[in-house]
Amino acid sequence: MRNILPAIVFLFNFSVLSAQFTFSGVFTKAEAACEYAHQLSWEELQQKHEELSAEGFRLIDIETAKAGAHRYFWGIWKKDEAPSTLKCIESWDSLVIMKRQMAADSFVMDEIEAYTYGGKEYYLAVWVPGDRTHKIRKLTSWEGLENDFGNMSRRDQQIVDIEGFEAKDGTTHYLALYQWQGPEFRTYYYRAHDPGDFLADRAYRQKSGYQIFDYERFEKRGQAFYVGLYKEAANGHRLEDRHSWEDFSKLMAEQQEQDGTVLVDMDVYSEEEER
Image (cartoon, rainbow, N blue to C red; front, side, top):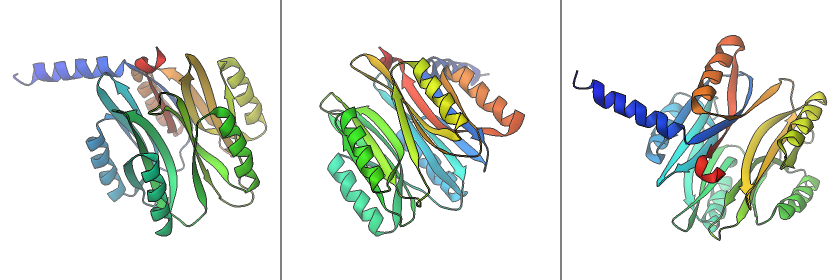
């Protein structure tokens, strides 16, 4: 009986803390088994990654958000023969150096996430084995990202991950990860501040055979923006936006049980960031 009260308190605190976040995600039919981590500390995430890597799972998405003085992390792993390496790197210059070192050792950056803490910028990067060309870009304006996207596309570098975050100077910066995956591989993006416009564009792209594979929501000067990355895909991709953790976790379980649909991309947003 002595352990019941602490357990109840823990569950209550966990439920209250989870309520401080909203969740969005992209779902699709499972090509392989997936595993998830919810609201872990950095040390716990590292341990989870090591455990799942040993079981043959590759990290395909990582998210972070803050509640009060605490920062938490979420992850999605997919069963895959290719292992993944996770690193937390302080400063953009250090990330560029690490990227070059990893590329020299035949690793490709496959996922990027960033945040600022204590006046310093931190970058969470995931690498997988490979030797294809890839670029990571940091832009200080959306107009700069648009111009960069055009330049990179002309060099057959396709955007595969995008991140908007508040940099240490207090302004919104953008990270764009590009990869070359063959001459036929093409990706596209769309940004809107009106959710109706965003959904209308997504519906049009789906009819044309292009599915959303990465979703990002952020705020700039008090205005919300919605960004989607698209690629040609046979399987349908379903976007679920702005759920509580209770509803989102139920949705994940129901979709998996009904038709094998799994979560492959997640966006976590805190109430602090929404204000």
